[in-house]
Image (cartoon, rainbow, N blue to C red; front, top):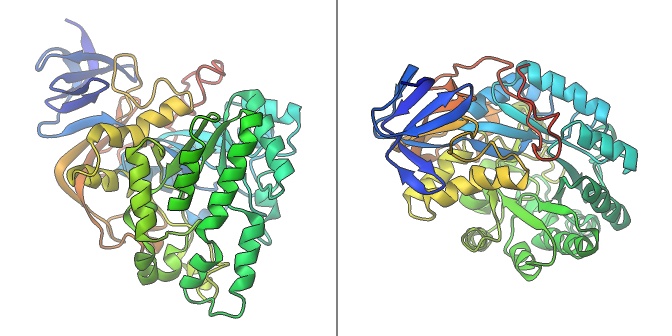
Length: 468
């Protein structure tokens, strides 16, 4: 009889064919077999009676910024929290100090993450000078995608945004075309710089300590216009375009109108799906996020876009700041640090949506995992099948997840006020990365266990699964 490293027994296993009553065997970090109940032998057996075994979440929008700003969290602190949140792979955005905008800086960040990460990680890069040689070199370094902003660099942060911020449309077009040559996705934070400037001018003289000023300074039109322009440009550029953190009904309408015109996809985040501006008012500066959390009508449109397949990814946009930084910005909501931690909210919030009948479990896992693996060419991730990577989570659908400063592991637990008091149906009981338990109510993994992931079909030499 074949002996395996691990067998997970008695769970309801979500496979591409739906839920199955099978046992799952793991060998050498991969799924080795789906077995009839009770069959097989293993070094370790996990009894998962009453639980669901799901693919680990692949979070394609995450900010740690390491090795810069350790006061906001570290690779160790934030990947520990991600493990507790059922995330087995995260994609780190290129904002650091300095910006990740060359192949050399990709390698520096890769080395840093490889030493400290508890879970798998991929890296974004900014397209930098848009030169053919430098863009190709970053692709060859194994990045998962490029990232740009259509907004200017925040004041005083030019080194973090050099080669990342392109408010000029000609440069945006060049970035799309540069990314297209690599066949890697290009992810865009899309807001119109000109319309943002107009909106800020219109609120000049108002009380900027009021959180309403932030919503007024970034109206939905800014996002929708930028997205529409990108989609028009992409008809010619033919990039693999991905629109980050969609927030509004207006943008959803734009995405619908451009369906089929080029290769594009879109994401949204739990704070847009489960919170409205009324919740932001209660949390104040701690809920200041760019683009802002909007109205109930926008939230309703986002859920409909998910149901219709217009939005195909749900991500954290995890962005940790220190409590002191957030408080220091409270007098000016327009300039205050934008972002909220979401690593331990993503999966529980979507399990809650399943429990409430809003979406199916199959769709929830496509949004959290499977679609990301397909879009970013990681065929070993996001699915429970033989030969797939054993990146998994066990969840108790009858359990509860309560969010508060005493329940979170993220370094930014003190700035998660937008979610304080949330009580979600569903609880993550175990997270498994490459066949090893990294969380089972407490973090069990070790720094450096996480693997560097890159598009398998583009850069096979970079996808070799070597331990750091």
